[in-house]
Image (cartoon, rainbow, N blue to C red):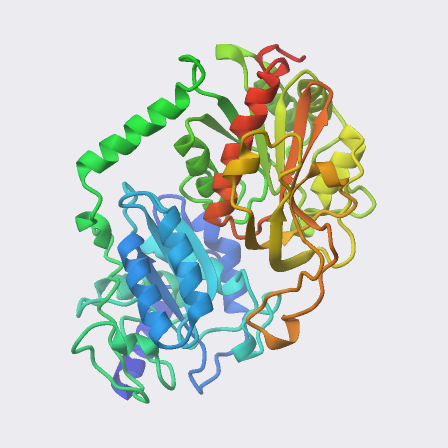
Length: 507
């Protein structure tokens, strides 16, 4: 172990000599260093890593079968909650699609993840940028390290597992060396890492300090273990035929056109489908249901010009117009302004176009936090709020008496557990999935589990506005059962309004 760690440190020293203090350019794709400049500077400013080696960041790439195998292993080690998450992710992946994870290596706390399409080849710059974001902008706290997501720690090393070939770890290390981040193809953390059990003959035993994981190689030219998945090419073709059939339901009508607006920007304002996991998950669910999806990004600082461009695209009316518009995360997180709660939705051309389009028959689906609730009130006169204890994982029950559900009242799951931003003050007929009496919070952190949750908090809601509909979903993890329900709801709502206003420009 000492030899491996020494080599990591030597690599850092060697690359420091070539480091450009103004902006690290070495190793990036053309122009790619610009996206990482501020991240590299922030990483350099992190406090020194603890020498007890408690914190190692592991990168892991897995497809459907790999996720299921991993879940089986986690079950055996008593980590059923984490295993359940892996199985849910596996169920939502398409053939040869993969998920790139960043984990706290010892306890498998998820720091960040990203969907990777089949034709995407991961090279050192991709992994370096992903690792930087995982370290500096983790999606969750790490209680075992007393680390809050708002105050990230410097890891002892970034572990990029490899099957005796360390070239990828070295290449990523070269890019990140200027930020003082070490990489390794071996696990160099302290204590026991459960991955020693993944394959027969894997080196190390419980208590060993140096373990090799040969399970998920991150070689840039390798697709995934799904290359020999049980789903044959015939199965893929059959799935394609099913999608075509879904698009043709209703007497051969053309596919439902959906404008999908990216507004969360966790991965940057230009991160589109295949780079933003939420955008990718929602777009995939809509397409699987037979929708024709077009993606547009909402630049938060684009001002009136950006609003006008998006308004024009929504109401242009080409090819029959958009029947539905799904807006993801606009105004969430630090973008929320209490004194201007509808920011950055705006009060100009985008608002005018959107409200007219909905009241004329369009179906708007919003995802987000307090800004989404404020837009529902200010733009559409709904009673929805998002105050108090609105962010929890808990059980939600399907409200089969919601008049907008139609056939979905019989087809959607009667209940599910989800971590979501929840609406309050939703009239009972407008609740799609909401908490029942006696609902309680779920959490891997004991002090946060079992807290009572108010009855009627809605993770999903829908209300008629004029001839159209406004809907909301608050799932923060874009879980497969949520995206499937949203896609089904879009089709049902479009069918019930017949897309009346969506097909007329500026209705």
